Length: 196
Image (cartoon, rainbow, N blue to C red; front, side, top):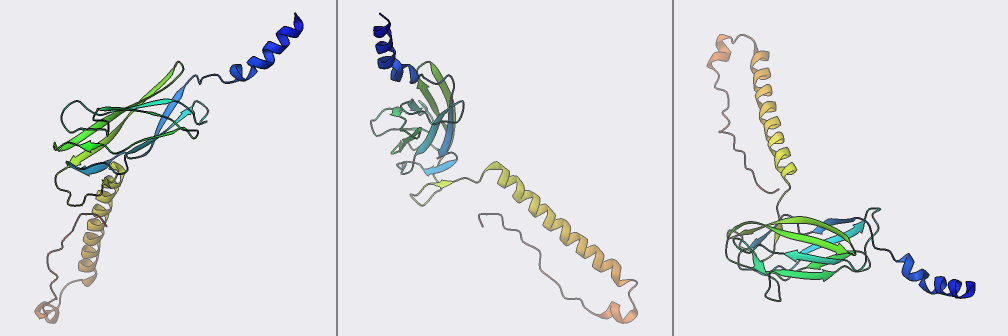
């Protein structure tokens, strides 16, 4: 009897060791914030990585990508709005080849992962634009970069004002000769905001 139990434990050990994770985490690796031209096809798509609570990749997790039913949206190569991908050994899953519709605006792709009883979900924000000439997608600068750009513009304006005040106050009281000299004029400053 003891021998049978030992044999069963040896045979069942691999099955017992392969327990499903208690918690799943989804990290978007590529695709968040991408802007696509309306009517185009996604050439890069969205890549996510599914991990457990310790950060270890989860192999074999079912990852679902769901596009919106209306507004800016599209379909996967299957013609459906939902695509289910099985995560590889590194926990990654990639959905690409979406055919975008011709409605401009932002859209959210709902992403869920499941393995055993564990579930996780997130959204990936994209944007469809009719102003893009290129067929290649581009990534929008993160909001933090836009805020920093405004700060640097403000710092530049403040520095220019400080230099102007310092130059004026260092001259002192103008003399009669200095009053008749025409100082060189610099045109109205222009600040161009755009991609570097």
